[in-house]
Image 1 (cartoon, rainbow, N blue to C red):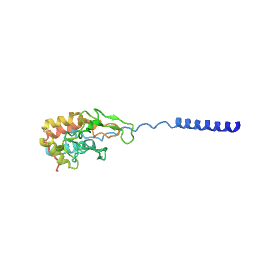
Image 2 (image 1 turned 60 degrees about the vertical axis):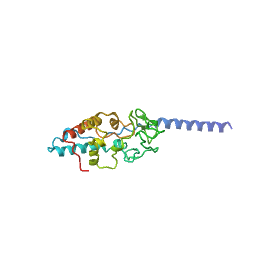
Image 3 (image 1 turned 180 degrees about the horizontal axis):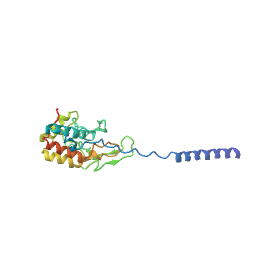
Image 4 (image 1 turned 30 degrees about the vertical axis):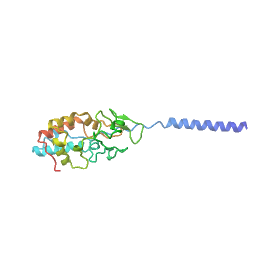
Length: 216
């Protein structure tokens, strides 16, 4: 009996040693590097286009890489319900804008979305996005499913851009904190192309060349 006990104990110790050795040999994998933004051309790079109208259209087309990115489009839906992810799938849990654009009564956006991005322990959702002004764009500023030309005309028209002049529009694009979230979207999300400063320069150069739009 003693021999059997010793053999069992030796086997258990050997198994424990193997587990410990395995744990030491396989440390946790390093976190994946954060997604990097795609490049964005500078406003100065369009100076070779001599025709102001053609340059204006080219500038807005470049700015459109930001405007039509998921970081912007997810909060500019036509159906008054946000989408999420790079594939712009329906928001989970289901959500609607409500009268205020900040969610329905009893379930505002701030039930989950706080003043800043909040990291999570999840694998599929690595952070919950947040900003002090988190919410959907007004209905008249819905962009999803529209051509870049149609969006351009919306953006420069006060009735469909929140009542902004072109000067105010530039300030909104270049300096607004919620717009800037697109370049600081939290873990697990790819930032919008370029930087907010580059985007603001493109918008200003577009305005300076007549704010011309691509064909709708």
